[in-house]
Length: 94
Image (tube, rainbow, N blue to C red):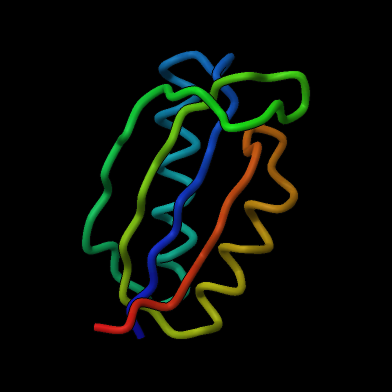
């Protein structure tokens, strides 16, 4: 199945920590027998409302083909990550 995920990371992350967080997302997908088809870095953007005292965040779009178990594992990992302000995973119709 095809999935899209938008992840908002903390704007306070250093470049190296951000790279590690992005690599961790890709590893979770690959370990779940999935394939990352596209990673689009939107960069720092202003949030619509304040989240955890932040007014901006680092946005990342990830498109993947993976079984539902991989998307569930990614959701679990993102929920417990302190670096992630918000995330959303949706199944793409295409």
